[in-house]
Length: 107
Length: 107
DNA sequence: AACACGTGTAATAAAATTATTACATATGAA
DNA sequence: TTCATATGTAATAATTTTATTACACGTGTT
Image 1 (cartoon, protein in one colour):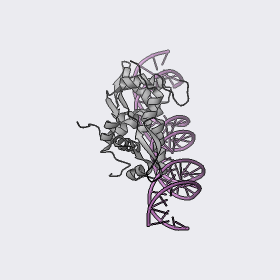
Image 2 (cartoon, rainbow over the protein chains, first blue to last red):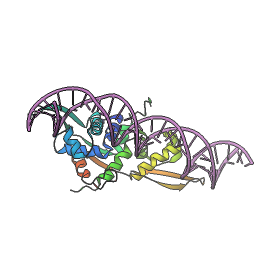
Image 3 (cartoon, each protein chain N blue to C red):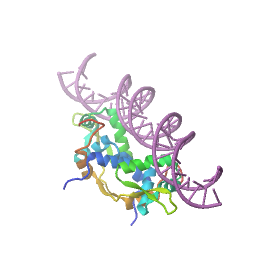
Image 4 (cartoon, protein in one colour):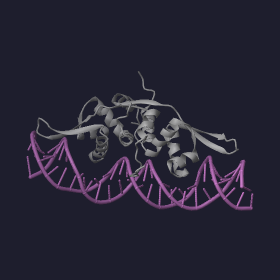
């Protein structure tokens, strides 16, 4: 049985998940989609900082965002969770590592 | 069904896994226990740097080390993998986040 | 027009992680 | 004694990540 995830993708995902705010974002979006300003309020952080975290999660393909025009006519950027499930154990990691790059080295 | 892992422990584990060398260490130790100097050679990194990575993995309880006296009488520090298996998905994370601390805040 | 609320980013500062260098110690073998 | 191999750490440098500040722009409401 082959692993769909490359070592590099797994690493990117783990990096994206290794921050408390980003775990919280996952938890919030697991319940429902939400827009940026509201997320920032719920987390108690500034929008610029939130953007940074959202970007990392989106780069890792864990969430994705899209614009919606609200009834009142405002553009709202909603993010939603991109369902995932990884069985993280020694086997899985050993397998993924077989094609893992270290800092731009060919390896 | 309760989660044995606190949010803080999950985060620590994810942080420990979010580095290419540390993933490689996991992969190596998944096959067999190994001692520090040999690990350093296999990974192509210095021992001081390796120690840092081993420490993070050990703090996250993913590996543990112990001294062994070799036949030739030298002290060798062997590390071995501490078997683990986490089903990483939205549910699991949402659950763990319920008791997650952010930077020494009571939350 | 002024205000409240939304998106978006550039520039910078602060903090944490990662990496290197230089040591110290000990054992067995040549 | 000198060499090769092992453990272990302190001090520092380099890099990356995280966080802040200051902007710009747009829409609807008062």
